[in-house]
Structure formats: structure tokens, C-alpha cells
Length: 116
Image 1 (cartoon, rainbow, N blue to C red):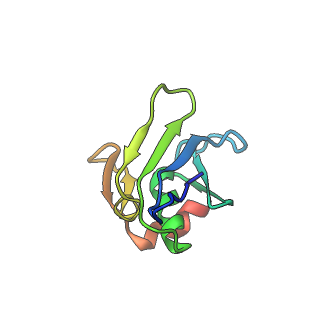
Image 2: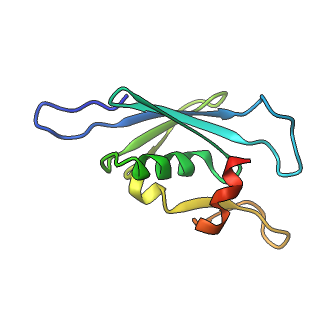
């Protein structure tokens, strides 16, 4: 859904996020799906550790130019706008006994768990 402007500038990526209702609710909670279309190519990710962050990592890995991203979340009014997909890709959501859900730096070690 991004659009190239006539001057060669890159536009805003419009993305959508929703809970993955195709799988049963497990001990890790509900996985979320984030998806968008950039230059006609669809991108979709599923994650327990922040779907918007995982989508940004997928876009960066695919070579999409750094640009803003607007994320709408099904069932919630409004949207979140992030200035940079490269910046967004550096984060994830973490949870532990001592600290509830919080944003933390992405750790590649946990990347394999996002595919569950």
C-alpha cells in the first residue's frame, strides 16, 4: 500500500494487525498477525512478541526502503504511526515474572519462537 511519489520519495506504509484466531489460546497468550502490501508485494507475519515489530523486521529483510508505517489494529479506533520501519524493527515485546509486558530490544535468539 505504499506509494511512490513523483519526486521518487517513498510514501507511508499502511498495515493492519489482528489476533490470530485460527489457533487455540495457549500458555503464551494469543499470537497476532500483521500484514501490509508494499509495491504490490504482500507481507504477513505472526508473532507472540509484537507483530508490528516482526512485520518491520520482515520488511527490512526484504529490502524495503526505510519509511513511515501506520498500523491499524482491528477492534481499536485510530492507528499508530511509526517514523521508521528500520527503527521499529529493533524492538519486541517481552514478559517475565519480575516485569509485565514491556518493550525491549529485539534479540535474534528469540526469532525462532515467532514462527510457533
